[in-house]
Image (cartoon, rainbow, N blue to C red; front, side, top):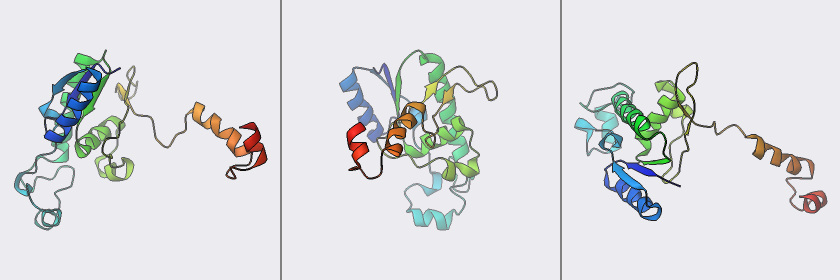
Length: 181
């Protein structure tokens, strides 16, 4: 059950959000603050040219191309995200946006150092949902937002592995596995 969809106004995100709204009947809000990063003087350049002309362009707080850096984009996204949380925390919300922008938002939620974003937070694939649990605030960091670590097996799943590991897996034709699983 989706109550609300909040989307970047950029065409590809907006069209995705409209398709979800059509199927679910959920209200749609276009949120300018969920847009991609503004590239300044690097706008329209090929990646190779950006790297040559602005070698530090992809650093967290670089301003070499008169652009919005990752730090500024993250602050913009976080402020908007927090505003929507305060207003809609009682709803089941889908947010539609752009991988780089939401990767920065996940960096903040997971409290990952900016220098570690590329190693600790994987690139976000298109059309891949990322569930966030909103719980009571953490006593240490005061955050309400939590993402399950994808390297941790939860109890239900890991207990399901027990039968495979004891009945002959990976041989899917093992007699015990065929008989008892």
